[in-house]
Amino acid sequence: MPEHNLEEKQMNKMTDRLKFVGRDNVKIYTEADFLRQQPKGPQWQDSAWLNWWDDKHKVGGIHRIGHEYNNPDCKGPMVAAWSSLATPKGVGRQVRYLPLREEDKLPNGWGGGDDSCKVEFDNDGSVWSINDEASGVSAKLRFTDFHGAFRGFPSSGRTSEDIAPDHIDVTGRVTGTITMQGETFEADGLGVRDHGWGHRDYDRMRSHRYMSGTFGPDFSFVSWAVHNAVSDTIEIFGWVMKGDTAIFPTDIDMVTYTEIDSSSTRGGRIRYVLPDGEVIESELIAAAPGFQNYFHNMPCLNTLCVATCNGRTGAGMLESSMNFHGGHRVPTRMQRGLVGAGFFPAIPEGQWNREGTPFIIKRTI
Image 1 (tube, rainbow, N blue to C red):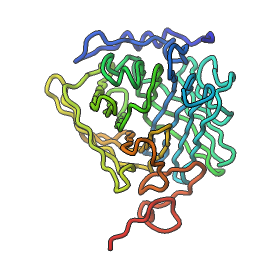
Image 2 (cartoon, rainbow, N blue to C red; image 1 turned 30 degrees about the horizontal axis):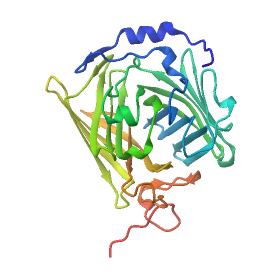
Image 3 (cartoon, helix red, strand yellow; image 1 turned 180 degrees about the horizontal axis):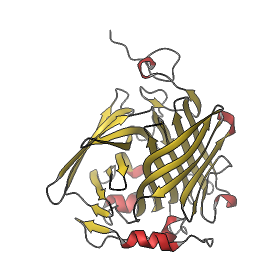
């Protein structure tokens, strides 16, 4: 891999403070794990991710760049990249699946297959740069970590074997600006960044859920539920961060509020039982239309949310998929989700259910 010059001092200070409750021998990642890794096996993917929401300014985004080095369904290495930005003016979406170029293998990050999206690490964190000239949407967003990096994903089981052998998930603060159709919006929100790499077989995922909530440096959570199509099992895992302590629950329950189209959601609810018996419940309420990305055989919907817990308000995200059609039903229109790419003007909440919008019309007869 290319040499990089990130400072390890601050990162080491953060990982030195990490503590764990409810799981032994948790792997702590180093600064070198933040960046692209050398491909070492079949169906190898290496991806960077960011989800965030700023409820004060009503702006947020979902961003992903995945480098696929040896997908058996493709003739060569590919980049799967998408970026969705929501503001009071509307939604700007990019959806790309392009050949992987040498210039996408950035020394300190990932390129998105063209010049419209990239993410790079520096001594102060990571920066996403978005420039979609066709839609008149651009952004520069900096993510600052709240805590050190560790392997919260299980080290055994079907999820580890089939979906995500290594996965970094860190909550933090997002700052920057978004320009949309000539209007500029400030961003100062909360969210989660991740880096996942290794073997990934998307055909194994029949359905899944991902929920996150970030309330500040002192409290956040992330969780997944993965329904494996081959083993016909469901594995649920996640953790609660209290400052620099990661707490692995004894029980996690995740519920989504799914619309009639079986895919788009209004939000959801999550409940943790911690090892000391403490119960934590959080409600996630949709703050923007869901962003639908048909990824290989999997319809994956990301819904930016306002998260509430014990009287606090934070930033949340709910990702969900339903793939009982085995990848043969490509979503077209949805009740609360946007399928295509481009710019979508803002629609007041009470006016979604009418002709001329990108959403399915719901009628009582």
